[in-house]
Length: 531
Image (cartoon, rainbow, N blue to C red; front, side):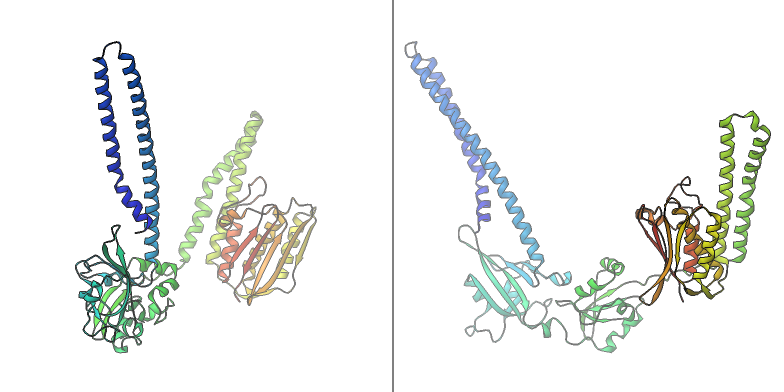
């Protein structure tokens, strides 16, 4: 036995030692009581001698008591350390057992199988059987050609209780794969040297003939797989489990016939692997043999996008432009009348409140206009034609310079950037992107704006960059949302609809848009266009 087994045996004897120590203490107390009774019977002349003897005895008993207590505490601590070491050793042994690639088995002293466990990639249905009551010779027999004396059998070989053996056997149990198995075993002994049985490993000596069929089932027997409404894989049942056949839907996942099923699952997309984890392979038998069938129900087809009804769009535009504006006009009109007729009667704070109401109404009007423009982008048809983005950008920058002639901004526009698209919608894209670059670089002493293109992997990517305020990339997912702003309205004006409109226009042209930035280091907007 190893040291951990010895420690376990020693811990079994600890309660007996504790009982013996308790008995010794009780006997000591009884002796002490007897001596006290004896002293009470002595006369005064002999009393001093008796007291000295009693003091010495009490001191000895107290020392014995303290020694016993210390011994007991030490035993408890030792038992705790040994228990932790034993737990770690068992966990380590269990993890190593799970990593084994072959079968594992163990027997008791009478050679009855107490364990028969397959490797990780073997279906758990192959572990079943009456292994708990079978002897090893009821499950296997010696293979022909084994270098043993004539007439020898497996029972005789095991009865010798050899410290180690390796035998070639043939299965008798029907649930085992046919072929020649190689069993290796090591003898187990208890603390008294008595034989406890064997533990060892088993593997197929001829995997080509027994475990992995060299050819998949006949084509006629797997043609039905194509009629299964969903991905279907036909698997072998003997270890290692391999993929024998699959239908067209399953082939799209990337698995190849002849690969181990465990390797196939590692190649599947995460969504498919998650669906497979809840589906156990089912047994399947036909004239050619026994197999396992893994089937997934087909996913429902995605719903087609709803077509935009022109009448519904017109109704929405009418509701926004009239029904929403009506109460807003009332608020704005009465606030203006109140300021014009009674403003002189109000103090500064009252007039400031009226100004806030009128300013909020004006901003709401602007947001409604932006929302109408955004809704019209989905209904407006695309008029594709050659568009010179460089020329459009020049027109937009010229308008920006006229709106703020006091600013000195360095603008670089790459020439001859020509695309296919709708000129009106693409101008809206440049107005928003270049307008944002102009707006958010207003606080820079030397503002710089660049619009250029770069060919990457056969596709042109267009970039609008500036050296302005920038933004925090943690909030980049809010950048292209409707009414989403990363800066306060007091710092930079706006409605929060411009970039949402840009993304919708770019995606209608078959492209995409994204941004990169850092606070105080400017922003870079990239977009692509199909064609």
